[in-house]
Length: 318
Length: 231
Image (cartoon, rainbow over all chains, first blue to last red; front, side):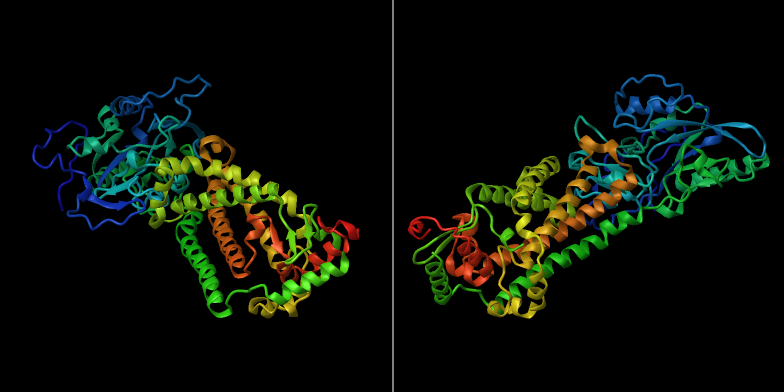
């Protein structure tokens, strides 16, 4: 397996040789509305680990995201909560979501802060739903990326996504979301948010390393009384390349509605699977029936006799 | 009931052959605006339906353009079809004789029209097409608005949008099937197309396919010059 370009929290020297070609066409494992040849090489799967228990809600990750991606989220008004902007937008790919939760066991008020954004599903619903060839791609290291020049702005990715992540820009009518800093990863850098995080709540590396790191964190949390601490790497979407360490992994919903068992909606699967086959079959049958009827029954022609009958009728009634 | 079969533009021109007015200019323009919209919608919609047909977006200038035009053409179709609906819904109301007509399905397919009860302005299959089109277009406009993110994103939730897009695609498939049958029926029953081009059919066509309609017209003396003296 090829080593995937990676960093944890510091910047390693940028590898010189294979960098330019990293995360190119040959690293694609999936391409929306198209088939791709098996990738020439298998990159090592990467992951971002977000340890919710370490997050202090400083939003450095949001700032870093805005800076690296050069987006300009609109200024909004304060509505009495910390979330700003109030939702993910085409210009804000990641968002700290704050929720106040009263723990019924301890009676403590817990301030749960979750960095929301694309989870980079192994089985991406957005890519499945996308009708535009090459507008959504998945690399062999697990990153799911939107390719804006191929995007048509239809919003099907929004319907496919089990996490409510993609947003369509009203400016260029294409869909935006976290890229996992694929452009940084391709040249051996970690994502901007991970780099900026002051408490190392966000780390980036191979998925294997991140799972190991998570294990040690979970062990620590359990030793401190969080008996349900665990890793959020939901199997319903094949696992994700953005994972959370949650102190209450038994109830992810309390973290601003993180879905408990996310999967691509059966409605989307029906639409992208059965509906296509049934649809083509039905249209094909209608056309085939017409052709067959034409071949066997022949045209239905008005005869001279019909015309005479009509003329007689008119003469009689006039 | 029977008199509802006649539309006000319908009239017989006596002569050899007899010519019967069936669709006035307004109805024909209305029909063709609907038809063109429907074809454009099918082409752009099918492009989003399956990757193998995505190339059809090229007809509209590209994927972005097809995505942007499609719902607007849908709005045109909706209002245009509404015009047809207002014109023709009365003549498409089901009648008692329709049941018997449909019981002779074999004769319909074989073209043995002399064995069928005389049809009014529309036969039961035409009526079915009319009502099916009407219902499907209502389903398509409603589900279409639900997935028109540009203007109506906030009107529905994402789970609702998923259902809407599935219903939209299935309704479109059914509508295309009905459209295929409609077009084929026009080709099969020779002499039908001129009803929507010149606006008239021959007396023989009316006698063969819509005899009760022709008889009712004659009964009500819906004659045009040079028939006047007999009035």
